[in-house]
Length: 523
Image (tube, rainbow, N blue to C red):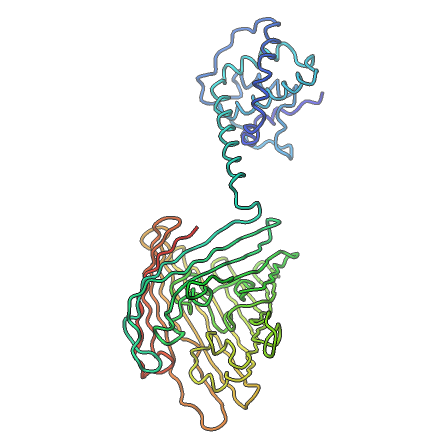
């Protein structure tokens, strides 16, 4: 018989988790038979007890006895590559796992009527080792029983073998307590309590792919109370209003060679296709900062389409995609190519681990009265209806960056340029946007997060329309400060203060102040 290297025994710590799941019951069933064989032979000589030793040393009789059994019966196979890793004593539980493997092997030989291969001396050694390690073997048996019970309970109650349910629920208490709407009237300053909830189904068929399905509901009305989309919160564009339930996202991501491919039917956005760089501080309350560069990632409010990103080099990623917001609808200015759509590309550079840079390009089309002027990234643009009220094409460029200066300090930001050209009249508008953010991870306590943000909504730098030029607009600015307090792994509380200067791009309007306290439950 080919001997199994004794070095394999010293690999016992690696297979402890496997051997405790072996058939201990079979060992019990054949214990009487082993004892019978042992009693037929000569009595074993007196040996020093090891029952009080914490570890089993290579010089101990028990270690050497099990070594002999391993070499004769092949109880322990060692690591898959046949190597020996480490040269140290084993704990009593590690040793008991190896002993249990040898007991199982001997039981198999006895049950298969090849008991003559097992010598009386070996049976006596096994009996003695069982007595010396009785407590450890019993502990392993208890662990196996408990593990089997937990496994059975999990299998009986699991949601799905391929799908994991996650979600979050937000309770928001807040008010716009000062300022004026773009039309010059005062904001609605009542204190309100609203909610938003997301339920996500994360399904994987291979372990490397992801089918993502998200349902959402909510009842927030910050746009109504302030009269401007500049006050949009991060959940308002995605969740259903008036307590209705909506399908927010349905897309599938899978690897294809070195590329990741994404195909979506509902709610697919560029930042689910391309690597994002400019939001290192997580989510505050404002949709403007959470969504990232509006001229890079938010030209349309999600839709159907496809895209990919490809890791060209360790520090270079290229990505591209196409999205249409009305892909499922028929009729004029609808469909996969007739309605609002954007084709985009991004080059992402990571010179070193803490710094990420990205350059983006979008070529977009907006149908008459499309999302560019009704809740999209440009809905706050003063004078935009003069151009965007018609069918419009756009070319936009964005630069985005994120830099983690230290584990407790990061900075990020973006700048965007774009030109929107009417297809129906001789009119166009050029615009610009920017933002800067500072994040303070683990501020005051591990798991907490502080953040400061300031930025300019897309504003016109040049407008050309038939007839007299419109009045130049003022830049609408937003500043935000928030602090997220982690109460547990599943609950956080986040107070935020938001200030909007020049609402609607008009400096005659008084700035709007918004206070909000968000309690988030994650599961």
